[in-house]
Each structure stands twice: as C-alpha cells, then as structure tokens.
Image 1 (cartoon, rainbow, N blue to C red):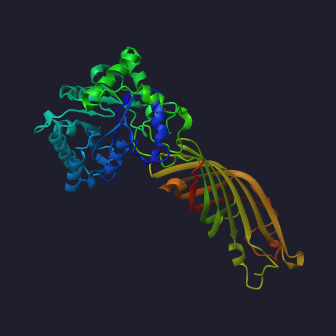
Image 2: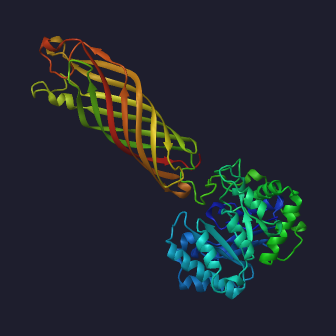
Image 3: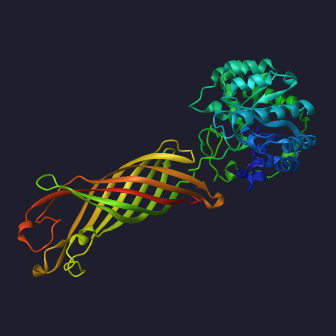
Length: 492
C-alpha cells in the first residue's frame, strides 16, 4: 500500500515519527507521500523525505495559508521542486468552507502554483472543499489540460468526480468514506479502480472507532477495506491497483522493500503518542481534546429574596463571589462541571444604623454554593464556542439573625438545601502546546431554591421591635455574571 497523503511534517509527529513510519511499514505500507502546506514547511518536508528511503514529498501552499503566498514563495517552490524526492506540487487548491484566506488570494496562489506544475511537469495534489465550480473552471483554463494530478480527500459529488476523471485526474479517498455522517458510496462506485488512490490525511481524518485521536498511516488499510466492500472486489485487488496507480502518477520507482522491512524492529500499533486529537472531517485540531480542566472563577452576585405573600421581594446586588471550576469532558459536545462559589453579603449590615453596625451585634450573610452541571457546547471544535448549562446546586447559607442585644446579641439561621441552576456562556480556547489548553470562560448563571423557608421574623428589618417577629415564608435565587480561566491538563 501507499499512503499518498500523510502530513508527517505536522508537529503531531515531532516526538515519534520513526515509530510511526516503522509501525506503518509492518502493517504493509510501502511508501509515504508528505505534502507541504505552508511556506515555512517546505524545507522541513524535504528533510523528512531525505531522511527516510521510502518517504517522498510534495511542495505547495495550502489554501488556508494562501495569504502567505508571494513571488518569493513561488520562486522557492520552483527551485526546491527540482530535488530528487519531490514528486508533486501540493497541497494546493481552494477551500471555501473555512475561508482562512480570502477567495481572491486562494485563487491567485492556486493559479500560480499550477504554473509550477506545468513548468516542472510534476503532477498536482488538489485540495477542494466547497469550491467545486471555481476549481473546475480554473483547471479547465489556459494550458491546465496538460496537468496531471489527484484530488485528495475527495468530498464532492458524482458530477465533480466525473469532470475530474474526464480531465485525467485520479481520485483519492480517506477515511471520510467510513464516517457515519457522510455517504460517499455512489462516488466510490462511479470512480474506476484504476483511477483511485488511498490516503489517510494523517494526523487528521481518523477512522472509527478512534475518531478524535491522532491518525496514523497504517490506517490506510481501513480505506482500502471500505472501497473493497463498496465495489464488491477483493481487498488484494484494491491494494494492488491503488498502489500501481500511485506509482504511475508520482513516478515512484518499484523497489523491493522486504529486506528493509525485516531489518526494522516491530512496534505495536498502540506505541504512538495519542495526546493529539483531531477533527474527523474539518481538518483542524479539536481545541477541547483534553478532558480534565480546572481553574478559578470570579463574579458579582445578586441575591433575591422572594416572598410568596404579604411582603415585597427584594434583592442585594453587586456582591463579590469567588470560587473554582472542575470540568470533565465526557462526550464530544458535553462537559460535566463541578463549581464552588463563596460570597459574603454585607448589604443587610449596611442597612443598619451606625450605632448597631458592629461585629458584636450582626454579621454579614455567608453564601456557599456547590454546583453540578452539564454543559452542552454548540460547536465543540471551534476556538470560540457558546454553550448552555443546567444542573443542581447545593446551597449552604449562614444568615445573620439580629434579635437585639437584650436577647443575647447576634444569632444565626443556617439554611441548607438543594436547588437548580441554569446558565449560558462562552469558551475561548488557547492552545499552550505541551503545557495543555487554556480556556477563558464567561457566563451568566442563575441559581434557584424551590422550597420555602419559614422564619419567625422579617429578615429585612432591624432589631428592637416585636412588630417584625411574625412567621414569614420566603425562598431565594441568585444571578451571577462571572468568568474564569480553566486549564486543561496535558496528560489527561
């Protein structure tokens, strides 16, 4: 087998590229083709190809980085493409899904790099996502009918596949054909086996059941198996034909690698570092791939005392609140969060006359809340992500009960019970590399007590009058705009 598209130049393989390659070799992968995507990766990609006998490379600027393309980059690609291990110009094309670079810059970079393909006679590795019309139009213009190439990670429809086949292009499939959310069956059926190539697009596009983890080249067998199943032909025929196709397009010499493979140590498939998690289809890292995070929270609390009858409800606003988060991401879209917050309410104390406002007479109210919530993220793999939450809260409050000096000074009413919480918020993710992931969190949280408490006094009034010592029912709620920083630890 040949993995015709694997980004072994990605930082995901900085620590264990030797192991990754050896493991793939023992699984039957003969050759690897590594495409560059950024101007700064051109020399690095060639060095990787030169380091391993069975690794070849392609040079180009991905549409995501088209804004970095200029004449100096053009000349550098043209010069470097003459080196022996360079077998294609790529990965180049258009991507209107993300638009990390504006379409005009993408088109310019694409057209100029097609010129390099024409000048060098090298095939191109084409990237096309949601840009079918423009890609086909550009490929059909000027001298581009002289170009050979492969459309990598094909995700368009049957009509686009047929147009590319008519132009002489090959079609390359990744594990996207195995994903439950996509159906590429009809496209795979339409493309003749002598025009198909295999790839992993590692470290992206990991096949089930390891979706979310770093992809590796030996998983190319999963793609071959799916094609075999769809086309109802043997796995051996798929491997034989796709390997011949890749060698033909990229002009890879046919070498006997058996002695080379036997001379290498055997490694378990589980030996690679799985600290890298990737999106199965969106071709970008999942910023929330680490599961366990914790950090501080700060907010400003508003406590509302609600009286069901007889008395007007009132609130205490602007009360400082502090605490901590503990997050555990148990599913792709969902996080379990435990949060503790603490507030001191001096508002009641400040209502008293100066003569009564002293620590021997009345204390502030103390509020503790332990929240257990489920957070549902809207688009979990975005850097900026909105969410909603719901859960339960254990309220533990110490309410200062002023009965007057004549009755023994200050007393306390201890109020403990469960309630509900709900909220909305935003996560903003920042990768710290090997140090983990830092998430800035802002949210608005509501806490509700559903029960009613019976007091033998009106807690809003000052002491010194029996007039206010009457049974009173009330319940409480809190409203907290707050924010925090959550550090997702790198080893979990």
